[in-house]
Image (cartoon, rainbow over all chains, first blue to last red; front, side):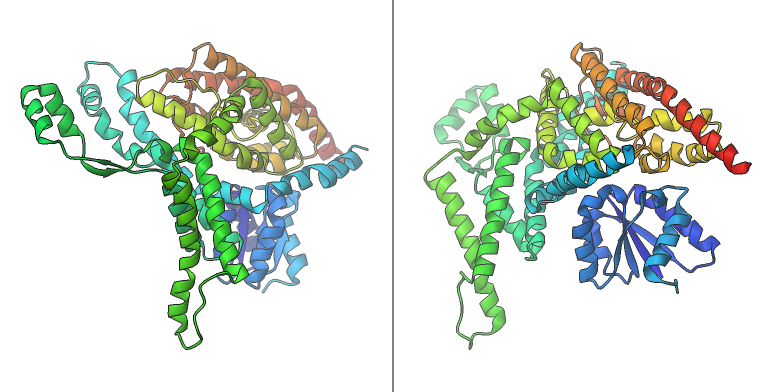
Length: 104
Length: 447
């Protein structure tokens, strides 16, 4: 399963992507985490992602980004602030599981 | 009680305000300009190189080489940052067209066309025989003639930040014309026998014809100088953005949004970045011409002296968590957040500590950048540190970025270090209180 994190410039999301990747690997899930900037999101999300994850600090852009994700047939989720830290990988993973049901 | 007020403020004030910045035209400006930033950053490094001789011993070979070739070294800058509006306009047109679900490429090209129609080319005739004869007797005139091209030339002055606002307006006009012709059916239609590809090629002519005729009529045929009109309208705004009250307002707004966990800099920047670019480009141009650099607060001022380590000058807080934390959580956070903070990425700090909706840390989160801004403002205006003339990559560590942005002025690096130490001191009492709380919670959990 591929997931895509998006933040303003794809910088901080890279840190959280790493945390999420580690948490997922630790729990034995086959998840591939990528990150990108808001400008690149509309194109990138078309590349076979299971879900788009929007960083909490750009939640004012959530509606626009969700529209772009849904247009590509991908669900989109606003990350809880507690899940958007280098120590919050587990929380973010839990949030994804809650949204998608079980992870394949 | 605090939670309730915070929730109310977030739902009724900060989030709706932030959403205003998502208006499609503002978004187009933001995305169009952000697309030009790599170009501005890289080309302003040529500026740094060209003026290295100012900070190197004059008798070194490399110093003399650079000084002798300064004009040539600056040529890449002349065709990039110096004419950045030419690039930004394409991005604005592209982004706005995309937001209307129109073809971005066509939108970008139309916007570029509209903008270039405001720049009047002039034709320079070749030297006449009489002039050539005069030049034979005057070496000065001969040298001058050798430097003057003949044929059509495009004046570059308004292709840069001076033309930014005209560029924005014309891009909007061009894309709105495009949208109007596509959505209203006001376009050249062909009978059904005509192949659709041929029909489409005619359809695309309508917006181009309208943009070309309208803008050319205003600027070329009637001869209205739109650049001087718009710049006299925008000038007060540009000047106002370079005052201490505006700087403090910008800092407070950014911190206000971030206190709710919204990317304040991105929002404030959407509105202020065109003004910052004008301020920076004026500085760069003056610097390249060897004149006094006058603007204190283009974006690098905030990047390198106010928001060191990210919005809120949180590098100070990250240092404290990394080295002075007694709680296990604080130590773990400090360990992971310090390195990104050195490179000015502070979301781990803001959401990790968290600072968001945390009254204990929001106070220094607002005070530290405010104090930094005031001190840096004074230091730059007293001439202790050179004003920013280049845009260095924002992920550089503070002192290095400051050094490069201020035209390789080592005093800028010193100021950066002083402000980092100051932010450590400002955060310290609040950090101590908060870390003790964390520690108390941890030992309560362990019992």
